[in-house]
Length: 348
Image (tube, rainbow, N blue to C red):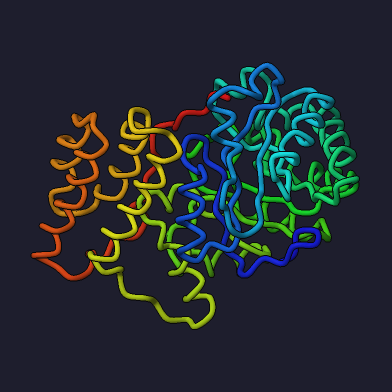
């Protein structure tokens, strides 16, 4: 799949998730087979451009692959300025957020709330495309099927976005009203794909290699985008790419490999956030990694009481060393084990 001048190595992408898809997590997912990863949402507000949070989110130091940054906001000029600011920081693709369902985002008419005002939505797209064009930076758009069941306008908005210069669309197959609940509407994603010439990426409840192949077949999409199913299970990207290429399933990863991957991720995480903040923000990643494992719930409860990075790091190492005494590989996970998680941090 192409996004402007960039050719992606495969058709499996990491969805942008606020509070999750920071640089260490994106690097981990790319290392494990993801062909493309989008940053967590970065605010377009100029008064927050130099905040610690925004600076961390815009940190691409040493990042491999194509650097894609998602921006969010409600004012065309402000969004254009944010696009230019992130290009200056290394962004090679700018993604516009029209898919976030979080109340604190939608209450400000950003995220999926923009789908209620198609004129404003397209004004934003046009302004961002105009800002990116002189730099040769393609613009992409992530959206939902609509605001609610009675107002599904993804097809109309997709056509308008394509005409305004968007070069790829990612569609989460739910309305904003649904949040992360209820059935995913893959039919609307298929209708979007049939209505435009640019690449379309399918998103929503893709949590296994078999499901990924079925969604690609049902929608005709060019790629799939994985979000919550990658939390604590980043090797899902290599599982899916292998299955799409060969039709065979990989064995679950070795316990020793998972230990090595998680510890390396923790080191990168502490380096980005610092020891004090890093030990706290790492808790969710550790919790996701152990939640389906024997003794995982009890370990998570103990681990959440630790406030020292070194103690946390060693506790994780000891947990997997103990697990390795009982099994060489992780156990097979039941289908659809990834239930919706509580909203992650979404403030700009």
